[in-house]
Length: 550
Ligand code: OOB
Image (cartoon, rainbow, N blue to C red; front, side, top):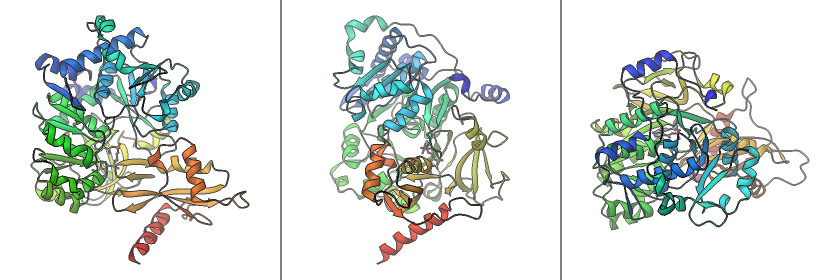
């Protein structure tokens, strides 16, 4: 498993250590620091319950002890699928203490995604939520064992009558007291700590190995840029597992700085406003559609949101208009965050001028980030012109897990990661995201690989061919449009209802379903015989515009 992760070249490793980017500490030391300095500060508030750093550390240790007793040890892997809650962080640190490597799936990931992670990792452990339909009984985990023969332990958060309850492991103090003092060994900090999920542009989602050294640096540097300290009260409203609310600076940044994470179930105004008022939240992170919902919400008047000092926005492009509205109407400072689970994170700085805050997506957080904006032949484009963003640095990964062929295309010969983003630099050197050159739809921050959806549609017996593209949407920025060519002499005529039902039955995450189907006779092709997706995008955009203009 670990052998198949691409390592950093030795000369880079040496330099990153020398320059203090890599400090050879593990992620669980983030928690240990606070245990030394301020253990009774509140680390997490979830559903009104305040949990101190001492409590978080104790319960993580206890769970790690329990798992060790079950036979889990360093280098084993796990799938974790939890909502935004205190237990997410307990599990995160428990696994870090044991050096068990999790992939943190999103709550809206379904059968196909989890099966794929099981195939990729052969995990020994699953920790999930009893409320998720896949875990209502043991059927799905039995199925998973076919892909993950090592899978032996399932822990569920919440009421469950078919398997062990995670909560029991955390709170049944009498029987687990003796684990509290279990000594955990130190592990190598240049080992993989966990796997991040790639937004993807291929048929199957790719896993991104993140090491202790690289991820810890990205957290520390993010905290530095954002100037967080123990006064930081951060509302975690985006999915906790996502790189943005986990490490940019996110919850790990809060723990590093000694502040407090307040868990929100989702970014809707009805979930967030009351929490902001009650817990005097001063920072949060949103995706652009949530900004629109916040600004247009009638509920704004009912709550005192005046403690909010900074709202970070990222995951998808924020329009300058929305940026200005956000600062004016909510009386906050906007920080744009342009990041990727693969590594590189760009921030506008808190003291940037207004134009920069509203019109750019920031600049790399580290002086060690290397950026090259190139054309399709990997040649630098002239200053100020748009090109493909490639990058390399102390916290940008060097290869997807088990994806040798794909990695050849995802990196330049010099080891720069090709992000697939089309960007240009502003005169003062900030990045402006202009578009994308990857086969992906960005649905308000949720990334969907076109090929993954196409593969599902092609499995339908009456589908001859298909192409999935982005179509414009006023709230989400983009939605998914599937162009479908029906098979001649198909037994039944293809309908949207039939395709929707079919794709639902396949176990793909809901947010990846096409929002619209267009039936056509043939797919347009480019000169070299590829499907002309640009033509399809233009076609659907024009169609939508003409309907709007009627
Ligand atoms: C974040 O990470 P991912 O891995 O879900 O998605 C990365 C991709 C980028 O390559 C870019 O295409 C897009 O999402 N993106 C943005 C953006 N932030 C991300 N496009 C335009 N403007 C932005 N501000 O989305 C992510 C990870 C860490 C921090 C923030 C976002």
